[in-house]
Amino acid sequence: MDGVGGSLLLTLSSGIDLEWWTALVLAAAGVLGGFINTVAGGGSMLTVPALILLGLPADVANGTNRVGILQQSLTGVRGFNEAGKLDRSAILPMLAPTVSGAVLGALASVWLDPAVLKFVLLGAMIAIAALMLLFPDVIAPPEGTKTYSLRERPTGFLMLFGAGLYGGFVQAGVGFVLIAALAAGLRYDLVRSNALKVVCTALFSIASLTVFVSTGRVAWIPGLILAGGMTVGALISVRFALTVEQRVIKWLLFVMVCLTAGSALLFG
Image 1 (cartoon, rainbow, N blue to C red):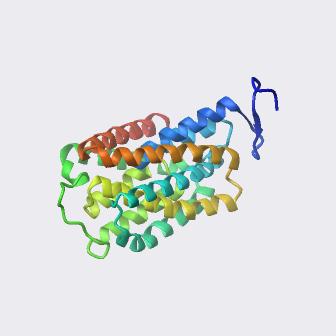
Image 2: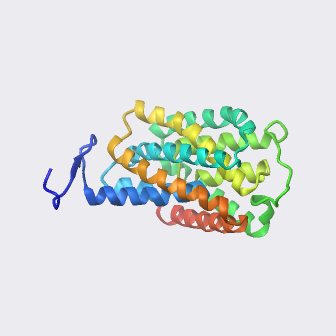
Image 3: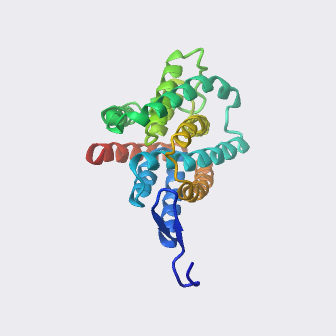
């Protein structure tokens, strides 16, 4: 390693080199991605390309991103729980659909081209954006709206399974699908939807990361750097979500849905 003014060079297990300034850029992408993922969704549209720009193959970038997603999700769960916004009674029933979907999705990602889900993602994003514009109460239920269990709303079970399947496969944009399941399907407000969303993300991140690690698709050094940044972003995001009005979260969600849909259309 050079002197104080020199470059800090980290050689990754994948065979690429990471200098101190690219490590900072990766950490900054993690902060922004962690913030966006926790309060809305779509942060992986920043973090996965950042990993690819470092020289990681797309499948390794996809797996490495899960290290940060898991840490960000655990941080978000703790923050929302401490603020009393986490419906802990709903967590156990969500295990089956989210984890089973994530395992199947992660296994599929090992041998399927992610482009297979491009038009599914794009269609889902356009549908969610249209719902938010035409029927805002569907995605952002008014305060006092009755919430439902998975037993009362079986469609919520199917939506969570689909979210786990997609999240295990690609990850990018899964937060929108989870919010649709929790807000539109089970009628949670956006703050409590986000709280349960990060629980679901943590659950299927554990499942999918296990698959990616076992198949050698995780580069640990950039993954841990990214995780550090995403942890900071999640901490900031939880505080933001707890202090702003729900309409602010709704419009941030709408903007991120449109940006994600645009990215899928132009660059997917």
